[in-house]
Length: 180
Image 1 (spheres, helix red, strand yellow):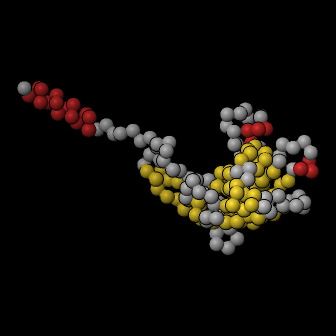
Image 2: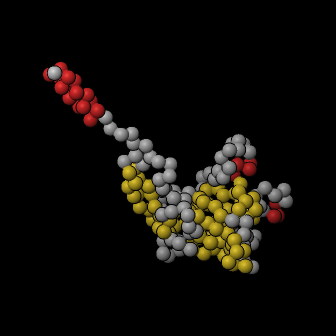
């Protein structure tokens, strides 16, 4: 009997020393990306698809990957056509600059147009869980949340850029509206 009780106690203590697996659920919100939605300048309430948009951050050669299923050397991997894009901001800096290249796959150089936007923000690290660690949320600055320039000296393809929501905590809302 004493052996049975000892065996049960040993088994119980053995189980109590186990700890649950710490796995971050894929559905747990992590560091959000900046959401930019494109609108028709002639009809400002209607979204508009941008054609062959390539977005390249400072220090990047290829640009943001929009189509992960394509090969690394496939130019379509770095291009998107749609009414919205999500771009990452630097978590260890207070500014991030991107080139937005409209119609980037055109064989006619005069139809390719590049605008540059520098985003200015503050960051805050927020604890998510033991398994997921921290995420960084962003707050676009009140004064000059972005600076929009035209590096080519031609016309801006982004006719108007408006701040919709300066708090970048989620990816299910528009933060910047672009009219073209």
